[in-house]
Structures are given as structure tokens and as C-alpha cells.
Image (tube, rainbow, N blue to C red):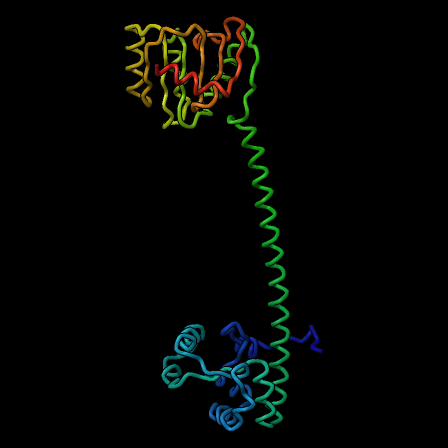
Length: 292
């Protein structure tokens, strides 16, 4: 059993690489630690090839050799001396190599190296568990964030509006905010049916998203309204106003889906009592009548 308190020397630790997902050491580094020439190690492997299957020892391919060269600090002269791709040894290969070389130095150093492999493997495993826990925590946090976002979306301006209610005289700001919030909710279109339209009504629609289309149906398109509309359209996305004399009540239609019946003209909100009601099923029918 390996003592967790063993200190791995930098001389060994800095010579362990990860190649093909395995922790390995290069033949030239082992030769340096064993105090033998690299050719002695390679000759030992060739003479005992049956003891060194590919999972124990293998040669670097071109790509692995190039990456290894780029990772280590080596003089140009030293690099020029590398005329062949080196052998690399796994933990099992190093254990087998110490048996083949049969020297006291090889046996002692191999024990230190194998201990280093074991300790580093434990370290990697422990960190992998930490990373996995962090990943799981991040996934849970993302799920929590989605739930929070859903709650916040409901609390924003886009929150579900009441289906009906009454505003009393003096509730000018409350009524103004109610209609403003409806306009901000629109994603595609707004249709207003209101027989009394002036520049204050146009001001409401400056709160819409830029791409939201607006059409206003009103009983009389006066010269003043035309002038107000021209000035508005010169600064903001265009509003279209059409003449329509068949409606007595006021309606606000959001995205061709929601119809709000509003008991007062938008220009008079909060000046007197008025009620509002929401209808979902009648939007298409109402729009169809407007086009006829």
C-alpha cells in the first residue's frame, strides 16, 4: 500500500506525461533516472519483446512526438539529437523494465516512480470527483435559475393582467399604467378602437416595441389628428389610423389574441369611473368585422 504522505520528487513528477489517456514516461528520462544510456533500455525491450506488449510500451507516432517536443524545455542541439521517435512506458512497463534491467538502481528508482504514478492517479481521481460534483451543482443551479426566471417573468411588465376591474375618478396614474403595461406586452400588433383620439392617445404607443404594428380605428379623422399623426410618424414607428363609425365602445386588441373592452376613451383615463373586461375568444371575430 502506498503511503499518502510520500513526497513525489520534482525530478520524477515533471517527467510523467499523459499520452493516449495514459500516464507514461519517456525512455530517455528513464535512462537518466536509472543512470544508463537510452540504448540500453531500448535493447532490453527488444530482447524481451514478449514482456512488453503495447499496453506496457509503445513508440510515439508523428503527432504525439511533435506535441511532446513542444511541451518540454529542450535546447535546439538536444532536439537535433532526437533522430527517432522515443519509446514510452506505462506504469506496468516501468515495473517490467526494472525486472529486465536487474540493477539495484533500476529497482529502487522504479519503486519511487510507481509510487509517484499511484499518488498522481489518486490526485487525478479525486479532482475528477470534484469536477463531477461541480458539474452536477452547475446543472442544478441552471435548473433553479430557469425556475427563478419564470417567476421573474411573471413579475415583470409582461405579467398576467387582471381580466376585469374598475378604476375610479382620480386614479389617473393607475389607469395610465394599466394601459401602458398592456401596450408594452404586445409582441406583434396592437389595434385600438376609440372614437375620441388625440395626441395624448398617440403618446401611449411610444411605449411599444419597435416592430409592433399599430392600427387605430376612430369615428372622425380631423385635420388636427392628421397633423398630430404626421408629427408622431416622423419620429416614431408608423401608426395607421382608419375611419370606423360602427363602434360605440372602446376596444384594445393585443397580438390579435386578447381583447380588452375599456369603458373610457384612452385620452380620458382616470377622469371618471370606468370599467374594463378581457375577452380571449372574440379577438378574431372582432378583427374580421373591422375588415368588412
